[in-house]
Image 1 (cartoon, one colour):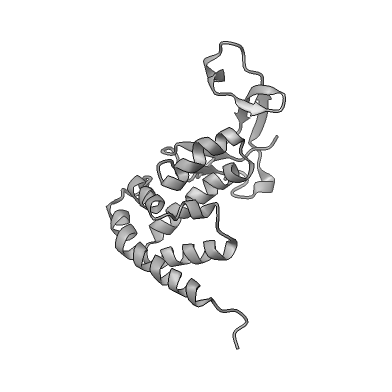
Image 2 (image 1 turned 60 degrees about the vertical axis):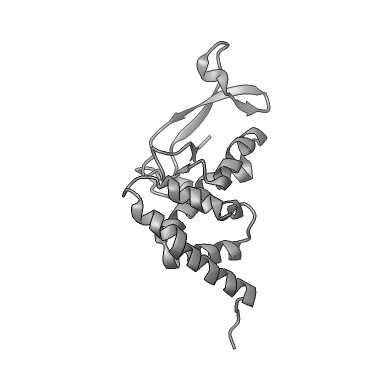
Length: 182
């Protein structure tokens, strides 16, 4: 007797997602340019309601969704995963203004998120990151202070010092989630 099995509704949803991936995502993936963000594919993920589910689904549902998409369209699954990697930190830890600005657009498939974790000396080992983030006060009248980061003690900017590599969706993303040491 298996220790785990899917509910019939989960099995049916997986079959539905495999069919959608084959019929609607794979043709878009085949038209994409290698090494470029496939915005029509991301937009279709949004139209299908799959990107919104990045923020509302549990771990099992996300795994089943990703596996089902990958069965018929690996690029569709990768696009979904990268949107989740880049947008989840905003969902979990972003300011209310950041969430309001970016999460609806990610859910609709109209904004592309980048994920900047890897570094030349650390790879993807988050504990070994060396990129530093240091808070700077914004000078009055400074054009860079037009959209300051909200902090408990007022507007500020952050200076990043170090290197990143293998940034998913760079340089074509609309926003970047950058992991740094403070």
